[in-house]
Amino acid sequence: MSRLDEIFSTELNRLKSEQLNWEPKTLKTPSSNRAMYDGKKVILLCANNYLGLSNHPSLKKAAIDATKKYGAGSGAVRAISGTMELHVKLEKKIAQFKKTPAALFYQSGFTVNSGFIPAMTGEGWLLISDELNHGSIIDGVRLSKGDKTIYKHSDMDDLKRVLAENREKYKNILVITDGVFSMDGDIAKLDEIVEAANEAGAFVYVDDAHGDGVLGKNGAGIVSHFHQHGKVDIEMGTFSKAFGVVGGYVCGSKELCEFALNKSRTWLLTGSHPPAVSAACIAALETIQKNPSLVKTLWKNREFFIGGLKDLGFDTGKSQTPIIPIMLGESSTAKKFSQELFKKGVYGLPIVFPMVAQGKARIRTQVSASHTKKDLEEALDAIEKVGKEIKII
Ligand SMILES: Cc1ncc(COP(=O)(O)O)c(C=O)c1O
Image (cartoon, rainbow, N blue to C red; front, side):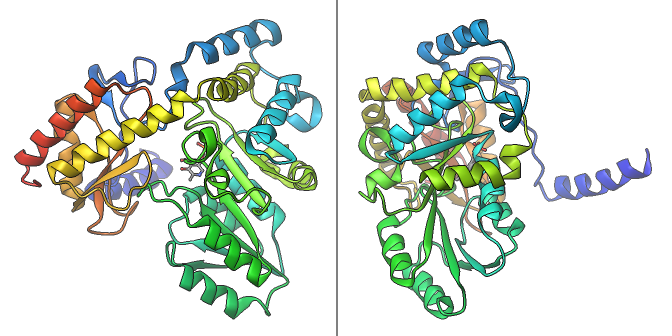
């Protein structure tokens, strides 16, 4: 083994001995309500595909048509010769959907947070982040040359304390929050955050990755949910979750988008999305707008499923959305639960320390509009059996 491989192996062995390593299962079918992983047919309860769009005929057709017309790739980064008319059309659609003056499409949500946050902040700034914000926000904040601090998760008194202690010390303050927190499925108190930030003269940045297609009027997101249009300075989101494709965006004023374009290295220095991706993203937004029943079905399924879990006696934590944790406590229990569930044909992801605090391990389930009542009934049945076998209920 080379010296470098020894370095890798030492760390991998540590991860394995602490059961912290990932061994991704392989998907052999489209990602849908029922799918096949590692040769086993399962009811899929751990996809972000909240509206079932990733295998939707309109999105697939749009991707194929765009490939035929424009080719497989864009040939360059956006800033040089890789901005295609599909990118521009998509950005107009995003701005329309989010009701903002402008939008800018990035490679992914991760590259928005890790590229735009450090680009827009710097010396003289204070970045205030919810302690449970997504890793891409954490990385973006770390890359900033500004000062950083966190507030206790969704604790408005703590946010106000941090703002009060710092408002005189900093020229610019940015409060950053996830809209829907991805481990617990709870919703940020965006209206209160906006009020507290306004009061202190701070700006607000919200990550709508799990709110788009889920919250608000016909899935328009958390700003719509709280009727905060025009009051949130920066919104970002992703096409990799409810929209079923891939790609991230930031939206807000025209100046904001022009600044983001000029200053985010994660936008400037990376090849632009292939035509198939941009076309499928456009089709995703059109499909949601034409089919309001998708979001309604998602919520109907969510209510049915969480109701079933509660009736069985499970603790579903702080869930307010289609992200529904089944709280299990120890990491080993969550892993065992997930393995047994998989054997019974249901795929739910174990979330363990250090992704969540010690003693807060869980199975994270995610409901989709593509689930049928039968899927959810069968899943509940399997969850009940495993819960009894390992004496959780
Ligand atoms: C809250 C949040 N923000 C950002 C991202 C990154 O999104 P993307 O998949 O587009 O990189 C994720 C995805 O895991 C997320 O959950």
